[in-house]
Amino acid sequence: MKRTGFRPRAPRREQRDPDRVRAMPTVTPGAFRAPQPVAVTVAATPKYTPIRSKAYLRLVAQLPCLHCGVWGHSQAAHANTGKGMGTKACDLQTFPLCADRPGQRGCHALFDQGALFSKEARRLIEPAWVADTQRRIQAMGVWPKAAGAAE
Image (cartoon, rainbow, N blue to C red):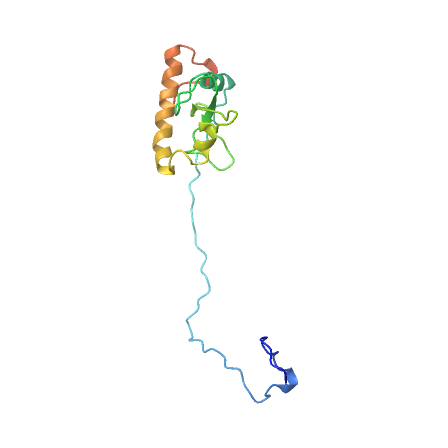
């Protein structure tokens, strides 16, 4: 018989020992219980409709980038805290960050990808930047009437 590195095939059924009995695991009575239904009451979370204001987003984009200070390339960056997956935060929760430019990555993309700050740092920075942006726009005296009050 030629020996190879392959594992030998399992013997055919008729070649197996018919007197051999497979060992069955023993089960202690009462060890397994059927799952009991659980009564859970979930309080409804109030949904809020985020404010959408293109006028406010344009005002935010006119400000210089809060991270690097460059003028003329800003975008309104939405805060990432307090929102769900696939949804944008309220437009009042924005701050100016610069966009990508030829040959240079913008702060907006780097901020969203976590390249500028850690997640913990972003959670601390975002509310401060939102409040600073709202204060600047109110100080300019051009707060849009449709945007509502600052939150």
